[in-house]
Length: 407
Ligand code: CTP
Image 1 (cartoon, protein in one colour):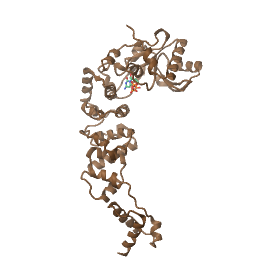
Image 2 (spheres, rainbow, N blue to C red; image 1 turned 45 degrees about the vertical axis):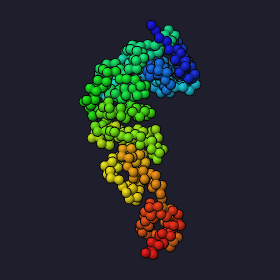
Image 3 (cartoon, helix red, strand yellow; image 1 turned 60 degrees about the vertical axis):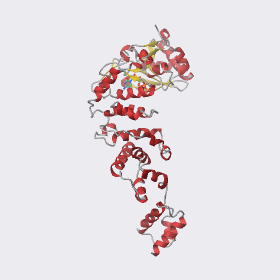
Image 4 (cartoon, helix red, strand yellow; image 1 turned 135 degrees about the vertical axis):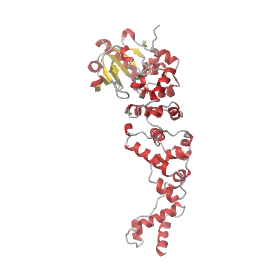
């Protein structure tokens, strides 16, 4: 029995997307080529999810088809990836759609990008290179099969049964980033990972090659850690998926601490990534070089490592707290607090962080002091007083220096 998704198509896509897709469908019939909505969008139509981006598979050459589309319907080809025969097309309404030539892929080495071949192959051959059955569904767009669901791998039943299932037993060996994708889809959709898929995942994780490049995994982890769900970190630990990038993650982290009033406004959604990465990496013996961290990410992780290994005892002296923590990024302090609940961090953030000496060198010169190295010492003395709750105003600071000088 054929399934048609015209209702979902009309209900979930914006008018601009709908008209762009219908334009592409018309062009495909005119050009004499088969095109299909493919992958995530079809899955999301079936799940009633909002649609983020649109992928169209072209059973033929997507680049030639995009040129035809552009000429015929005033669209603009805005990018072409020659080696994969994929292209991005901007429609008159401004929406952008990706068109990819159907292709097969083979993996010469685990974790590296696959080699693409047989461009323009049958749709069935194309979907078999993909990760999970739920991502293999296609939706016909040509007149002959408009809105018809095309299911070569049992993806429809798996969506109904909420199952994440790989297509063949080498899938995780070919592309270990699919392990993180499985977790991503599980948490995002509340699906279960099929038993056989889960066992194959565990097989892979029991003997991870820790020299494998991590570019793709990093990209998937970034998306995974951005899912708003408090289980994301613990689930990565429970399923052993952390083994893809580290050997000794911090566990039993009390994430409720991130909701503490004084800390919750100090970070935003983008920082969650670096927060989680720090928890995974601060104790790890694996090289982080393969992760290609940005200098910012590297800095934060190094700072957290430093705090974690050097300041485990609670600092009590305000000047010491200020001097140590004042040199550290606030996000590193947030992470350190998350790990330890350390009260001196709380004190620094809530009481000490914004304290500054108000006078400057010119004020001292006005008092009749000759510029000298002693200035630094004066400022430090003032700071120490202020950190202990004294010298609120500039006048009080000046008075303090005068008295000091007389001593
Ligand atoms: N894909 C794959 N293996 C990967 C990444 C992607 O087989 N490691 C395939 C999947 O079929 C997927 C398609 O490529 O549907 C497009 O990838 P992507 O845009 O990352 O996936 P989506 O399924 O659209 O996921 P998301 O909703 O998170 O964007």
